Image 1 (cartoon, rainbow, N blue to C red):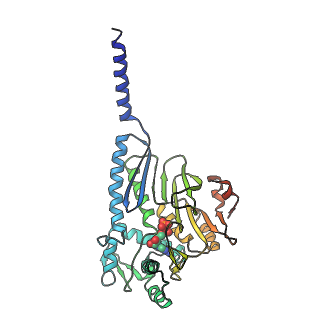
Image 2: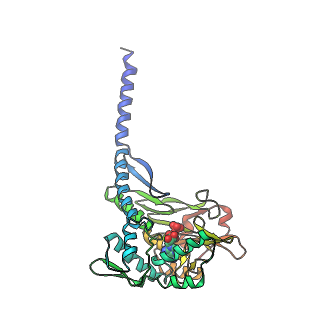
Image 3: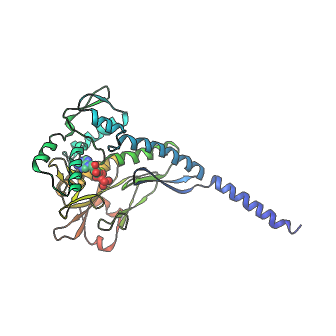
Amino acid sequence: MRHLLPIASAGIALLVGVFLIFVRTDRREATFFPMGPIPVKVVAFDRTIFQFHRDVETVRSRVDELARIFNRHDPGSELAELNREASTKSVPACPEMRELLELSREWRRKTGGAFDPTVGPLVDVWSEAGEAHELPTAAKLAEVRGRVGLPFVESSADGKIRFSRKGMSLDFGAIAKGAIVDEAAAVLLIRGVRRGLVEAGGDGVAFGPGTFQFGIQDPVAKAGAGIIGTIEAEAGAVVTSGSYERFIEIAGKRFSHIIDPRTGRPAENGIVSATVVGGAAADADALATALMVLPLSESIGLLKEQGAFQALLIRKGDGGAMEIRMSEALSPKVYLERRWAASVQTF
Ligand code: ADP
Ligand code: MG
């Protein structure tokens, strides 16, 4: 009889274990790669392992779909087709494309043209210049600038898009990642996840009660090599745009991958990284890109107008040392290493 006791206890332990696997909700995390090397991380806090597995599958197929629509470099994508054909005829566009275009118009207006997804031809000229190690000529830049500008993109009431200049190219690289993480978070919410977050290559959005922590990447260290502090924010976006990971180099000089659509030249406002906190990630993404283009004083003015967003900007100061400028309202949410904390000025 006595020897049956351990067997019975082991049996009960096994049953409890199996039961826990089925019902236990916990912080769960998954990462996948729908956009080349850019990881998409999905986190949910109140799901069983089985629920989460299905959450991730659903998010994944929706993200794959969107990533395919907006990949300008995939000749089979809807965006590539639009860029090929919209100079000669009106092209039907899917709802996602029209929505992102309209949101882009809003942000172009709010940023005075610093954000403009028609920069595609300029992005191409500068990336070719980087490969050839030779600056584009003034004549070339002037010609290309003539086919950049969102007002040259016409949307009709029947959902079609047409370019009014030849050789235009929409590039949603500065807003699509944000829109994709927003959509992924919406999918999780619809599936019943009450608290979670989605992050893709510097674009994050969190939802649900409580606060969430995001690392602030070191602008000097190599990508992913370190953080200079953390932001602890409530639900909403935390999106970073930076020139430290992607840049082109010509004759020893580094140029940003972000272009000022108004001058046709790579952005050169001294900001090496702009983190926007608040709102939806698509908005924060567009805004973060504009903050890499506009002069600091204009960025501060814009942020004060757009009350829903705060920003942390890392800039190269006049003496060459890195310093931080950030919204006053971020102060209680940001924890910085001492070296960086000493350089902060708020606005
Ligand atoms: P990242 O996440 O790469 O730091 P962004 O969100 O700022 O960057 O997006 C940068 C990308 O957006 C560029 O690679 C280019 O494709 C496109 N882009 C560059 N300059 C602009 C601009 N001024 N407005 C809109 N899109 C831009
Ligand atoms: Mg952006």
